Structure formats: structure tokens, C-alpha cells
Image 1 (cartoon, rainbow, N blue to C red):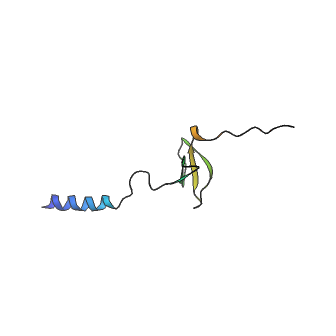
Image 2: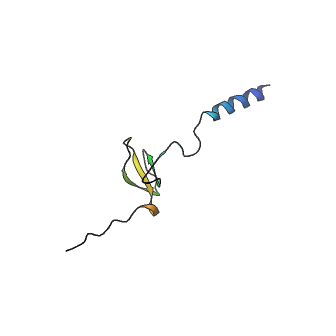
Image 3: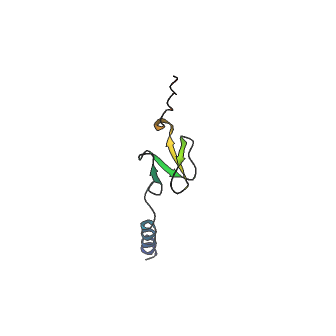
Length: 70
């Protein structure tokens, strides 16, 4: 009986948790994630609307264009 009660409590608790990475909002055309801190494999691009950082993986960061000299 106690195992059944524990199972019900566990299922109810899991039902209220967000799945996977859905807690992060997407940014930079869906390639980045709005977070408080970026990971070591990511770089900060710009601020998200909620004042968090838009973190992009180093491979997806656009290269800076060279200025044209006239």
C-alpha cells in the first residue's frame, strides 16, 4: 500500500515539472537560449527581453564582418 502511495506522489510531482530544456526561452532566431549564465561552450550575444543573456554555442556565433576601407 505504501509503495502505491509513493508511486502516486512521484507521478504527481513529475507532472508539475517542466520537461527538458523548455524552461529556457529561445533567442537569436531560435539558435540561442535566454539564461542567467552562459555555459563554457557558449558565448553571450545580446540581452533578451527579460534582461537575461542570449547564449549561443561557439559554432553558431556569426563572424564579425570586416569594415570596408574606402
